[in-house]
Image 1 (spheres, chains in turn yellow, cyan):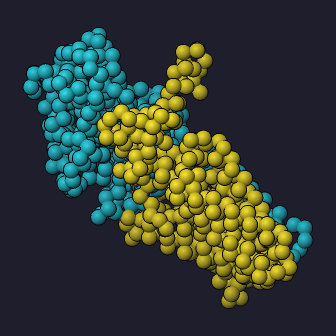
Image 2 (tube, chains in turn red, blue; image 1 turned 45 degrees about the vertical axis):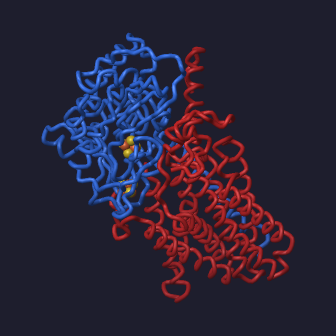
Image 3 (tube, protein in one colour; image 1 turned 30 degrees about the vertical axis):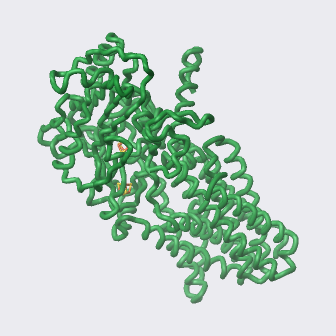
Length: 323
Length: 301
Ligand code: SF4
Ligand code: SF4
């Protein structure tokens, strides 16, 4: 049941908020609220981005012979995938049936596609990290690292398809921008973690990745709120709004600090890096909770659909084909 | 195959891979004759051994069930709407001779209290393009030979993806159990040529079960009949194979806007946008590769 009742014609009377005029069944929500758990799922979204970005960093570092950076990035890729998988399994209603995910391959289900990204990524990133730490099978280890780098960006971005391919208005309608928000956020997290854990003289690529990711994330989130109109409200109001705003401020400050002093000061590099990681996590919590909010309030389901119907009717009346 | 994800689709079973199959079966729920007795809710629970969903009083109306869910596969909505003082024209809806006389005109009226009653037995729509089925990663949800959509409890791992995918808010996870449940359109009964429990129990034939093509014809006649009698508010919901879900296997005759009954006014299966979704994910992943490469260009450290 919608706790705030939105603008719904609640309690069976016809009192309505003037700006959002619509009727509802006692103010009750129409679609179901996602049953995905917090913090499991937002953390999974975050860790997928972190791991995916880190796999890219690791391969670059290997190519340019930056061993300290390579070690940190390989560790982050393997750990991100491993811990993320634990959260994903824990979120299931029947965790012991996790392997049912690999029973079939369905392109219509991003969760199915994602399972076939996560599984090889985990294997490759773990093998690459293991080989690096132990020194065993170095060639095979590098090959696995390349494999992880190939599956990394899909791992960081498929989660946008996961949430967008639902009836949840704030997720579905954002399906053009969310993948870019997630790509940017993943790069920010990967760059940030490497900045935190790597000496400044080897962290150059990490700094550039964090700053580029921050720019991408902020630009994509900005265009999302502009394009979506009233459906973007949950990203701007209430708790998810606070999360999104805080994340954006932290990302901006960390990126600027990185540009100004990240190369010279180990301390600035570490603090800015940690801020990037935290901001990336907050973004995922914000996106996640904005979706839940838009599911709970019937107005985000009813009003856009009514407008769509009215537009179609108007188009039919004027003789132009409906869009 | 054309229109597998969206748009009109004549042969859903064929699209799902059945070569020989019975005709598509469905429900036509004519809410204009529903008396709100909830026999369907009870019959469904008994036949399908659905656990109780809590004995709460909602306080909002006679509807204490409140919504469809994992343990509510038929839900009778009770809409109380205040009506303008002008008397409602009473219309004989052609109800089979049951129930108290005068109790069900124009969706049942109570002139004295100034309240109009609307009752409607909601159910899973068994969509032509079922989002729940499309997104299910385990293959637990499947299309039956009757064209209906059914969960296999022995496969479902409770990932919960089907829950926010359904544009009607039908399917849900059962907390204590962890798996997803919804109406099966009595798959077990259909297989032995029996009608679903709810349709069998309905005393007013508000719930009609049969071949979908036949039900659609019947509904068209009923609508024309009501319009002829001046019940202009009557409309079909989920009948149109051109709508956002390719038409519902279980569709309705309503006496008000869908949202008044808690139904979405213009539902669209999420997978209609699947191509665009994957395209944008691909572009974003490529952008991320670009960010990675660019990070290693220029200054080496
Ligand atoms: S109404 Fe919802 S649960 Fe039923 S078939 Fe359609 S998408 Fe699936
Ligand atoms: S909860 Fe069960 S039925 Fe629903 S999508 Fe997941 S595996 Fe399929």
